[in-house]
Amino acid sequence: MSRSSVLIIPSLNPDSRLTAYIKKLIHIGFSKIIVVDDGSAPQYQPIFDAVKSLPECDLLVHAVNMGKGRSLKDAFNYYCQNYSDDFLGVITADSDGQHMAEDVGRLDTALAESAHALILGCRDFDEASVPWKSSFGNKMTRQVLRLFIGSARQEEARSHSKAITDTQTGLRAIPNKLIKSYLTLPGERFEYETNMLIEALHTHTPIKEIGIQTVYINANSETHFRPLADSFAIYSQIFSTFFKYTLASLSSFLLDYGIYSLLIMLLGFLPLAPKIWTAAATARILSSLYNYTMNMSIVFKNSTGRRKTFIKYYMLCISQLACSSFLVWFTCLHTGLSEITIKLFVDTLLFTASFAIQKNWVFQEERTPIRQLPQHSRRLI
Image (cartoon, rainbow, N blue to C red; front, side):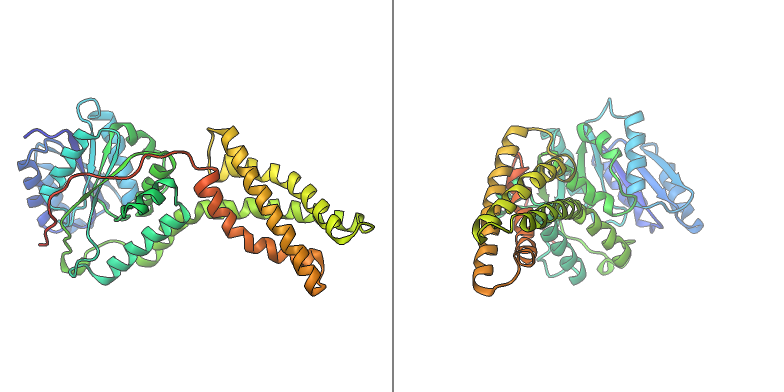
């Protein structure tokens, strides 16, 4: 059968099974395959010579190892220059044989049916054959992704027991509509694939999952994933939104706290409650305008629905102000501590809750839920 996608296989120091794997993919209908030699050692050259001799294959070569992310982006660019007019998109697959040819074919079928979605081939990490470190790492990453990237889509998916279940899968179908935007994403190594998911969540891209066979060869000993360096790069991408939120909140807090402290001193002639409420309200109005602008344009990057987000933001702001002022007043009344000192601790406690509410409600638009495509029964090899 004729396939609607071009297959992309990044490869570093492959074994002899790569050629047989590619021939099997050609046999099931893939007429064009882009293989990237990502700086493999000289002794692997005969394998790439065999790949290059196949008329269906184009070979791109890196003189030095540049990482999986760079390999994918170079292949995406090559595809856009040569094949995008004739195909619906690309499918990325690993070169170690862990992605069965029939599963690759199923993603091609899914791409033909959903030419606007990012399609993920997802493994079952509860299977006994999965190495514990792979199972633990993937489950940890998907929970962190849900917590710090979150989104209404993830929350809705969770309520239906569906979510992005395999954040590190290398088997993905990417339609033409998304490829050029993915070319500009940061990341040169494994973190690039995480950035694809983050971009999909931020841009409301439909995400579809297909269950694939869970295959690990030699307990995944041939992986080029560097546990410390690559994990750090992946998590730094996931945490980036929270880091930006922290910086924006810190600068807003310094503005708020400075104005509040100044007014507490200037309004010393007022009774305790009016003094606290007047100082807190004035400081929060001024600092919140600054914080709203920062969060909308830099942190959560929501450029649409400004009126709606403005209303929701100030609903949260008023609620947070009331909660903060009440807790400061109540604590001062029963402990005799300074209003300025108490506010520091109270607002720190409210910080994380405010992040979650802003991320998942204030700056969150309606999103298309994650859908599961009909899939065959999973099988173990």
